[in-house]
Image (cartoon, rainbow, N blue to C red; front, side, top):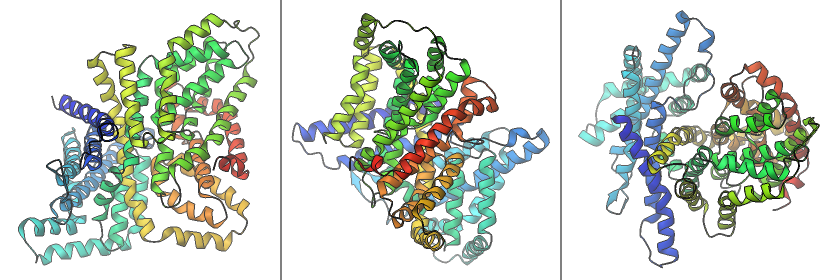
Length: 609
């Protein structure tokens, strides 16, 4: 029953945040009727959705994490590791809950109102989400004791916010014993900062969700820096009510709807009929389709999971070997991150909004994205050894295009409406969801209304995982900027590295490692504010540095031994990781060559600026 309520609430909130922006746009732009509080209302519904999505994502065990090393150990070792993970998760969540609840009852925060509703009501969903996850952990069989121990430690390390709650609710100003506990924790966190960070980082490799790892590290950093942990929930609130960030879950959901409908097969039919008869034509079709879907979903893994089997069947049916076909699909899964309306580009521009404009970054990434896509197509053409190919059929091509007109118009509409300034990014994302939904339900009839609700609900864990990563990583990002870490790092690097070409090589190597070990959104929030000032100090423009950054991370997803897309491909195609790595190597070498080209030739990133 609870599952149905959570899913229904999530789907209802998606409908609100998709329909409301366009309705308000119509009222204000066409009817000339101003709606007070319109922007703040929409963004707070997005925040409410993020909290509900966090609960659903935990329930489905879909929060982003690294591949767990626990599976390599026997039961005797695995059981205590799981207990430590459970205790650690409960500790972090308890601290985050108390911290967020402290800000909820703080009369100086969240006093704004819109449409007769208080902002405080919407913020309350965040501590409720943390509390709900704690409850789910505790109720799981065998977790109760470890969870209770974790909650005790969580209370201990959050004594500062706890005393704040006592003051705001009951006026208790003098609680020396609690102050002493808080002082003891702050002193301990300074001494044990590095070991605690190492412990949290190690737990990431044993499968602890990354948002908890990042949230725990942020909590310890702020504790060691003086105890200003109240910044963490406030930063989470700030970034999840950012208008550009709000576009990310909507584009993700639109891409998910399309991937579950007949759109994928229609796109394949169009490109296969147009260019399939030519050498490498089916490869070109597969690359274009996977690029398009990863552009909208914002996460390359979704494209591999949702469309990988379909594209692999098309390629093998055209004469490709099974391994080669699956390797091409895997290699093409992240190319779309370089094309608008890529969630990665939106995220990067939002995090570094003082240095770069999202519109400029869209323009700067187009040529490198095209080169990367063309390189995968060219590799496929070279590897196409078929002796016979079907003849081109004008009738078949015409029919395929006619049957796919609505799907082909969707990216055209979104691009024109956004780049012409009719819609901002959030409104374009809302339009994408409405278009994809109407196309799949009313035009193609791929889903009934009831089934479409299930499809939308199944997309919630994807967007929920991304949003929670953003919320957790924002705390670390704020700490680094507040501690002036970028300037310190810039001074250290420039002291020893003088040549910009050497710097670019080092930057590429570091980012490839980052791309292997971190998800895209965490890396953007934490690493990009550090590297951008460094790049600019070596004369590398902000747009060029951003494109190099994003290309490195997309290639990092494919880099052995721990690139995330390698594991996703292994799962999707049910084959050992070693075979996935062996098949991906030719494509990986080509992508690295393209990266070097874009890195050292500024024209490709600055031609449209």
